[in-house]
Image (cartoon, rainbow, N blue to C red):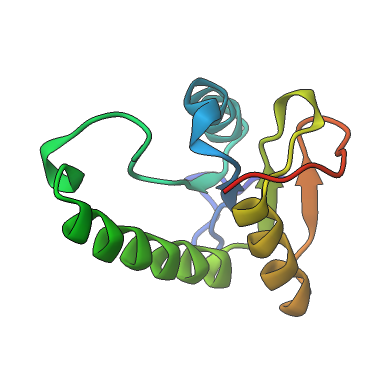
Amino acid sequence: MPATLDTPGDRPRIVVLCGSTRFWDALAEANLYETAAGSIVLAPGCNMKEPHPLWADPNRAERLKNQLDYLHRRKIDLADEVVVVNPGGYVGTSTRSEIDYARTLGKPIRYTHPAEDSHDG
């Protein structure tokens, strides 16, 4: 049961969303539903598949990608549960790596769709 404002000391469950940013809209939808369910949601903060000045330069983009990968692992560290956003069952290479990392920490993992064995970058 989610904590309410009148239960001091308790905090809402923290979930982290993992999934390919090619499904940016599905990640946003999952964020909406998890938030409405009373969870604190940690999610990818950048969609590097869309053009942006922050990652227009390839060298800067590579550094940023490494930083984002590091930050996402720290989000997994903080989370009580991992929610894999995988429309059509898709789980790519990066997401698979995050799932493997979460498993080493003993984090519960939930999928938005039945998972299939596919790969992405």
